[in-house]
Image (cartoon, rainbow, N blue to C red; front, side):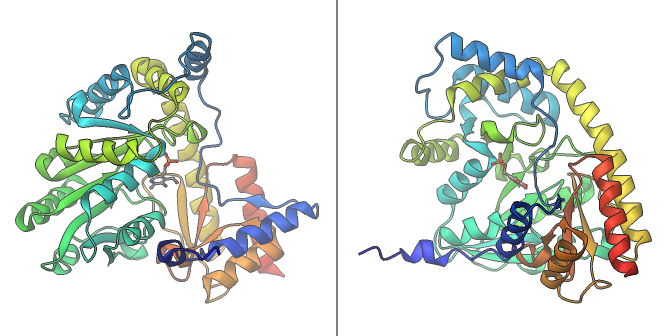
Length: 385
Ligand code: PLP
C-alpha cells in the first residue's frame, strides 16, 4: 500500500551517499578514517550562548513561540541586519526558522510556481536545485570555473534569463567553492534582477568566514528585490541548535510564516533564547568569530599549499571552510577519486558530482591542523605508491 509520492521519488539519490556509507563501514571495521567531508565547525558553541539556553530551560521557556519567532529575537535580528549588513528589515520583516535550510525551503515554496526558472551559480550547494525542483520550478545552473576562483560572471547570468526566469539564488561566501563575490559583481547581479524583475534569494550563512575579502550583502544594491537568508549554524558553531532566519518584504515573510505554521510551527524555544544571546551579547560573540576565523585561515593556507604541492590543483578560496581540489592526478572520475582517497589514503571527501563540479572533490577544513597534516601525509603516500 505504501506507494511513494512523485515528489519523494523525484529527489535525486545523492552520489555522495556511497562514499559516506563506505566511510562508515570502514570506521565500524576499526579503520581510522579522517573525515574531511563534514560541513560544520569543529568548535563548540561559545559558553555565553549555552548559558542563555540553560537559563531559558530553567525559566520554563519551553513552550510554543509565535510562528515567526519570539519578538526579542526578531528585534535582535533586525538590529543585526542593520549593524552588520547595512540592511533595513523591521522586526515584522524577519522570520525565524529551524535552520537556514528551512528558511530557504519556505522562501522557495512561498515564491516559486511550477515552470518558473531559477538561476543558480554552479558549483552549488546541492540543496538549492533539489529544493527548487520540489516546488516544480526548474533550476538553471550558471557555470563558473576553478581558474577564475569560481567567480560569477554577471553576463553569463544575464545570458540565461528567459521570460520564465523568476529568481536568482546567490551564496557568497559559497559552499562548496569558498568564492566571495565582490561588490561590483553583486551590483551587476542586482542590476540584472532589477532590469528583469527577478527576486534574489541570498544565502549568507558563511558571511563571517571571510579571509582576504569583504563580505557585502547584495540587499544593499537591490533592497526591493532581495530576500536575505542567514542563521546561527556556521557563524556561532550552532549547527545542532537549528536556528535560521530571513529578512524580506513583509508579504513574503507572512507567506513563509503561513507555510511554517502548517509544518514545524516554530523554531525550538530554547534555541531561540540561545540565538538571542549570540546576537545581543555580540561583542562576546565577535571575539569567538575572530578566533574561529583566525584558525580557519591558518588551516586554509596549509591545506591549499599542501594539495597544490601534491599535484592536486586547488584554488585559494576567500571564504567559508571548504576547498575544491582537482583530482585528475588520482582518477579522471571524481567519484572514483573519492573512493580511492577513502580506500587507499583513509581520507573521506565529497565528490563534486552533486555540486556540478566534475573532476573535483570538496574537502572541509573545519578540522584541526594536525588532521590536515595527517591528511596531506596520507595523500602524499598514496600518490607515491
Ligand atoms: N546554506 C549553505 C550554503 C550551507 O552550506 C548550509 C549547511 O551546510 C546551510 C545553508 C544550512 O544551514 P542550517 O544547518 O542552518 O540549516
